[in-house]
Image (cartoon, rainbow, N blue to C red; front, top):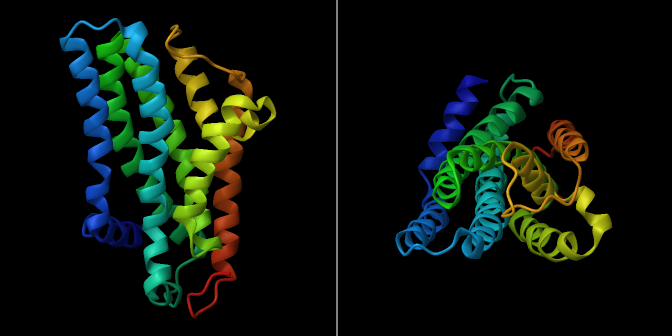
Length: 236
């Protein structure tokens, strides 16, 4: 399992894809520093930057890039066959790759969110955003890892989920919020650091329970999918 994790981390950071992780966090922190430097009222820029950019774009997009990359690239180039021929339980393969995806996504998103939150309000808000980002990274990573095993276009479907389901339906259709990871993240951050910048639209109980369901459900589905995976490395 540790070997798979090491190979995954080395492959992830050895590809150009990792460079895609840098611009969005830098933009988030840069905007927060700029607004703070010019004494712009946090009430005016907090929600657009922290929620509109940080929680709605930076966190899910980074998780999408990493979550679909830890296994999707091996499916695309056929090297998944070499992993499947090893005497390793499919569960260990998925857990190792999911662990790397969560770790990289959480750190890359949580650190800039903490900095931006601290600049906007306080260290407590920064901490709330960072904790929420870790929870979101777990749910998003499990979901996007599963997508990489179910389809040849996981990035496209992931963007549809982020932009259409969470970006449009999640904001205007109340019933869809129960299946919106973004809403769980906002609620968790708001409960840790209550502020007018954040507007929770689902309960904390729903957020925690559904986040756990996302992680466990997608992980179990990914393990099951890998068990029945074609040795030709093909997905449907």
